[in-house]
Image (cartoon, rainbow over all chains, first blue to last red; front, side):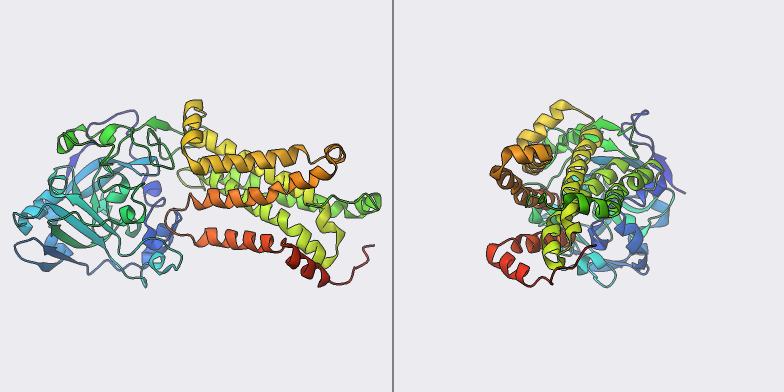
Length: 269
Length: 216
């Protein structure tokens, strides 16, 4: 039994839930290839059970958890969030998971912890994109948040979507969802969570720092060098209805603004 | 690119028309197929992007094919390859125009302000537009009258095709985000075709061509 929470704040005209078929067939998950349909085609071979997660760094005790010990079925909630990709398309997706804050609380971070780092599985045998000799990403995929961002009640650790267990191509068995940031921050198939004193190196930032900042908050005023972020294409769209809508600051999740008060978001993009 | 010679044109035109029509049909065929995929929901949740990407890669393929005609003719001594050069060049231009149209329609929603912003700020858009401008110049001067009027400078003008190839590859390179594999295939093909144009290579290459076959 899960509790349901709608998009916050909802736009009843625009924020229609994207069909499951689209959300599970149109993915950026470069571990499985760089075409949008590669993940759905190739993620079937990923073995998600058993799955363990290493927790280390500035915590009371470093240890490895089995997935089922990390997230109890009785804690699950459903949230419908907008997902804004850095490529200027967006979807609306119902996720099932727990607030990351509730897990971090149980892990007992030390007072010195300021950041949280995440890592995706690295296994080229299961993830053919990692075996590509022409790939540009330095595996494993890494992401990170400031501790207060990680503790924000909107930040979810996700195990399902559309009322079911996550399809592999959507980041099974455990992924992050940070709805006010570009999608690449919401790391998939997590095997390691580290509490850190310094900001972790993150994959896209290392690859092209001028294009992908550490914060990567959705911000219509700060363009990606290669395209505008002022608008987005809400999917699914069609040839005669490209469905181009205005992008909102923090993807419309204004309640996170206080996390960044006093920061120049043009500089800390 | 070389000017087609006037000699024996009528005879060649008579015997080569099925070949030229077949090439035209093959060049046209992908367009209704892609459109059908996009209209019937078989191109994913973002059919405009599907069309735009396929048209962009199609442009590059047609450009590479156009540039491979001269080496192919040297190798085979078959007239047919040079007889479709102008046609394939014009198809390349048509695909590039449709690629631009898809970008204006599905990505910018025909917003002139957004177009100006892209044109002034984004190198890969500038490079793509420059490549299209080159193709436009060549398409506009592809007919016989322009050829006569421009004389020797026609050939010089149409050497723009090499610049267009390089700009096109650069345009694609800047769009790649995570894997250069597919781009590298196009780039290697383009590099090969450019190397074949280097005077010493071209000379050696045409010497190795087989003796002429009679094309009855």
